[in-house]
Image (cartoon, rainbow, N blue to C red):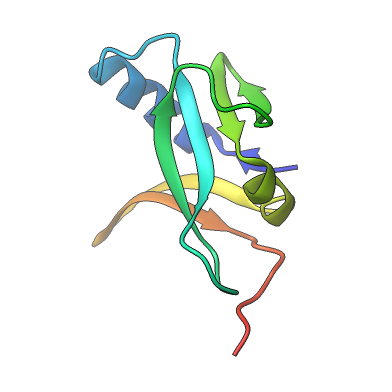
Length: 98
């Protein structure tokens, strides 16, 4: 199952609070098409029909069905190190074709 780290949970909660979206959650979805998926994150009040719900320390994470399958062994983290700052997804089980 998709893991959301402590650092990512803290940052997502802060983002929701800063945008006045308390009570909403984060939605993870597949962005683009082709054999090499990329993923998007958005604020969502209730997710979309068919989304899987992951709850962690009061944070709701809605995961689109296709993304849920592709991210089954992945981890969402928040990194703030040197020149890198932001959310990352690591541990993807699939690889790109080509």
